[in-house]
Length: 69
Image (cartoon, rainbow, N blue to C red; front, side, top):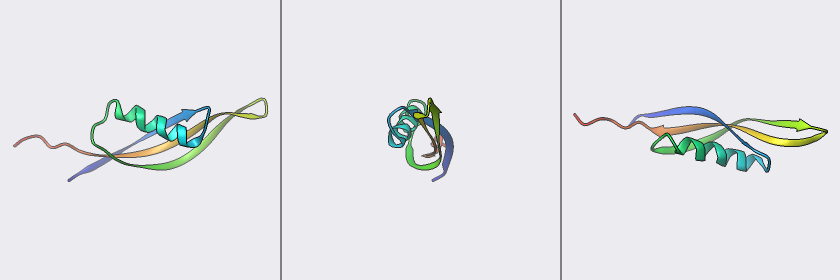
């Protein structure tokens, strides 16, 4: 088996967990065989002295499909 990974940033006005879920949900729309995810850098967008958005960089691993021989 061979695995590959991508980095994607999810966002949410609610929480870091929701931002991570956003990243995985979005990746699942175009990448098959998702197998694992790892939280990377977390950033916050602040406006008027309060948190407006959570941003979570997520490393997502997926199994590479092999063609028929």
